[in-house]
Length: 254
Image 1 (cartoon, rainbow, N blue to C red):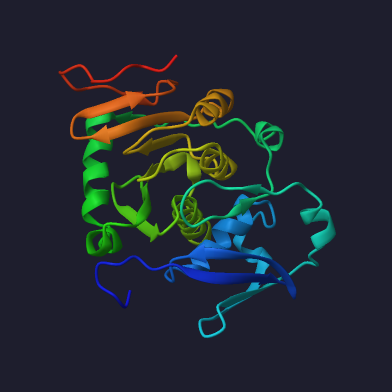
Image 2 (cartoon, rainbow, N blue to C red):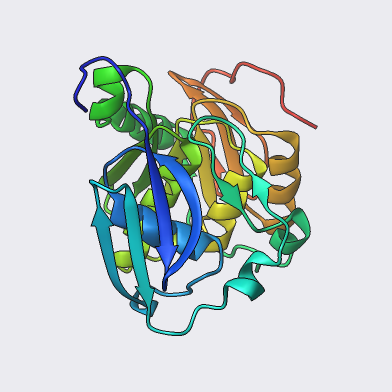
């Protein structure tokens, strides 16, 4: 970040096995995590060891990825592109029909609402780029021992890709993790979380109707408007226990 107070975004060209995939607007930080997360989220890889090498060229604004197996762009990119909403515009090749074929999430882990709100506060205090600029999104995973890992980006879906990439690279088990995000939980963000296997997702803001419908179908617990002692449960599978004495504010979506 060269200009204090101003969030920066960089056009980054992603090249896989010599094939130019697309140009993405990204924050120039934790780019290798983003590569792992994006390729996994889009179904181009299923495990970290499928990537042979990554070379980030800051001067030319390119990321060159070499996969261990042949990459057939005609098969991948014959699918219709869906451009993601919001800042840091991206592209996904999964349709709603594709995502509904994902495995339904299975997890026995439960969380107290007070614990989730506490971790949401820790997340906010552990987001240096947001603190510096006020214009960054973040994604955070809460580990079983309570430790948190945060990734930030100009785009909320990019931040989620980065945190998924970190989880894949470090061998985290999705059913043991809590995912928190600063951004609106949209269909494409929910699909990324579902592809990895997160069972509980929390946000400081809202979830879209399409995301809620998909979460219900895939057994994913979604809690929005995590602010202070406030929250709105969008789905309920018994994984989030409201242990607060005061009733939550807001209207429970139908």
